Amino acid sequence: MNIKDLEYFISVAECGSFSRASAILGRPQPALSRHIRDLETLLHVKLLYRNGRGVVMTDAGRCLKQLGTDIIRKIHEAHDKVHAYSGGCVTSAVIGMPASVSSTLALPLTRSLQVAYENLKFRFIDAYNGDLLQWLNSGMLDIALLYDTQVSASPNMESLLSQNLCLIEGTAGGQGRAECGYDSIQARALQDIPLILPSKRHGLRQIVEGWTAKHDIKLNVQLDCDSYTSLLQLVSSNIGATILPASCLRREIMAGQFSARLIVAPYLFRTISLATSPNKPVNSLLVNHVKEQIDSLSDEFRWPFTRDMSHASAFSTPVRIPDVHFNEMLSQV
Image (cartoon, helix red, strand yellow):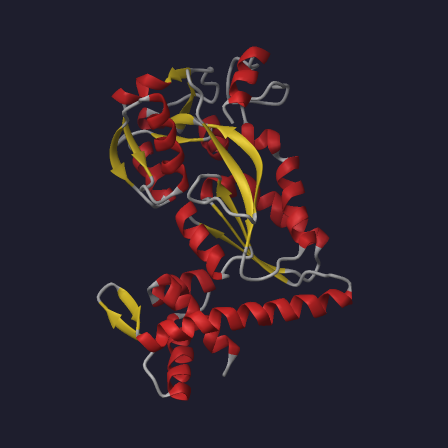
């Protein structure tokens, strides 16, 4: 049995469609179809049925997926344990993260990985929490950066840093100013603002809804949107506002395309955590490298709401949060 045939079958089965698996794996759909067809020919059994929404597994397919996942995990484990005798070098990695994290992390992490690991083949995948968690558990990702929620809790997860969240709004006609002045919004005032958020299966929405339930706040969610690009387009067009860290839109805020108001009374946070695949070993050197890179960018992730605002900011008044408020923020993390 060809290991690639098995890996591609499991990926398509996990994704529920050839098109989605193709986008994640970076392989054309005809190639995936050919691998699965070869597997079905070898085993003399149908593994997948196509329908209008994608594919579903047959009974034989479900059996093979369960057995195959364990087989692939053991193969990866054997490879990594034996390969460790060569000096522990890292050869490949797939790292997933939300687009709002990628906007800050992807470029510096790429540069640092290229310097640290000359022959490393790595790939980044942007997605919302729910998809990242599913792909991590299936072994399609080596490392995932996730929002820390009860749903995503995992023994392989470590909290790294917290970001305060803001109300993000479009500036009418893109006429905002690069120096827009610091502003905030009371949490209860959010009830009167039409919002666009990811659907309930994703981490950001779970964080927001857990916070609103705790503080008895009723949000006016007008639209669910699971595409980060589309969400920002809708906000830019003033269809509604959204909730994100200001740091993920730093360039756009400085260019006057969006405005950010810090949510206060009470503050709203999200915690970024690093999780590793439970189904295959991940090189600890690589994990530590990613953690160190995020730590080095902590001010960038928290921009502009830090105690030391000596660096350039989009805000005309430096946002020096008093210690009493900063401590209040930390107490909520």
